[in-house]
Image 1 (cartoon, helix red, strand yellow):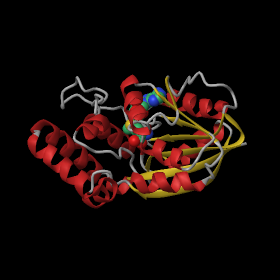
Image 2: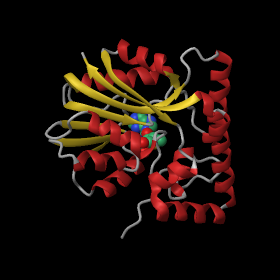
Image 3: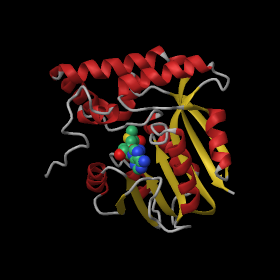
Image 4: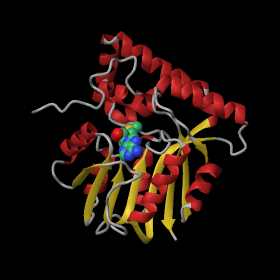
Length: 263
Ligand SMILES: C[S@@+](CC[C@H](N)C(=O)[O-])C[C@H]1O[C@@H](n2cnc3c(N)ncnc32)[C@H](O)[C@@H]1O
């Protein structure tokens, strides 16, 4: 089997973005609410016979869930050509893949009944978040669903100083400018782009907690990750720093799933 290089494979463990570092040590599930919240999202609407577009499929895990549900079509859009190759390998020719930004997909207006995006909006600045949500609205037919899985801050009236310190700590440990919003802020963003929130689901942000990792990666996957971390001191240091950020801010961070309907 040909091994496809992971994105940022040429960067050292110190500078690579946190999600690609986790992928490098063998982690397959890179979204805050784990496999469980992705399954909840995919089962929240009927995928069978619908045209599905996924923003940022990454390693192709949700792409596989979606394709197994019998959509009329599947198109994945990721800005990273290497991520697209990883997804292509994961879905084995069952859908279309495009290298483009989710801000400007190049897809036709009304080309989708369902748009899915996980763990990709949080890492954008305010303007890009708005552009991506607007693009989801453009690509969807009226009445279509936008399924979102992201990180959020709790509670809605969280002190601004705490928000800033969480964002700084995330940026420092993940090496990505992560800007999670509160549920109220996410809702305002979606509402402003013409989406009605049908359902909101909060799940613990437990990306690097042993129990969630076991659920997400299985015993063999977990053993592979632990073995890789024992062998690679730089990667281990980074992963422990990320874990420390997540546990430090545990009370104020959560995974969130939104089922949105285009008005
Ligand atoms: C944390 S990974 C999440 C991947 C996948 N959705 C998952 O949950 O496992 C972030 C992904 O978003 C992609 N990405 C980041 N910004 C993007 C953008 N503006 N447009 C399209 N893809 C983007 C990255 O290339 C990467 O594949």
